[in-house]
Amino acid sequence: MIKNRIKEYRAKYDMKQEDLAKRVGVRRETIGNLEKGKYNPSLVLAWNIAKVFGCTIEDIFEVTN
Image (cartoon, rainbow, N blue to C red; front, top):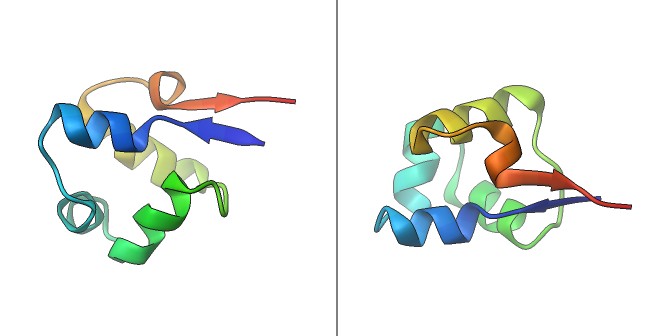
């Protein structure tokens, strides 16, 4: 399972789900589902999200057992 801190980073940057979705080229629902842990992002999507926030993938996503 992969935990994420997308919601936390969005709050830090005062960004709505829709804003992040537009910047990474997905639908708002995709961001919402990622935040809820309904599915894991592709490597490209994870990389693009990290790039928006100026951090590493590991800062946002954590693999748990």
